[in-house]
Length: 96
Image (cartoon, rainbow, N blue to C red):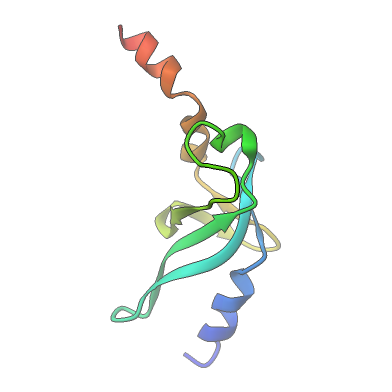
C-alpha cells in the first residue's frame, strides 16, 4: 500500500495510445473507487482531434475506463476500442 499513491500520481502526464499506436491523449487525472482502493478510470485531455472532433468539444476531456488499459509503462496502452469513435456513421450506413 505504501507505493500506491506514488504509482497513481505517476500516471498523470503520461501519454495514452491505442494498442495500434494511435495517440489518444494525455492523462490529467485518475478516477478512484476509494472503497475498493482501485483506479477505475483515466481522465484524459489534450485529445487527438482526429479521434474526438465529432464527440468532444475543444478543451474538454474524456474518462477512459481503466479496464481498457492493456499496459502501463513510459506510455499507457489501451484497447483499440477508442478508435471506433471516429467511425459511427460508417457503422450506421453499413447496417442500412
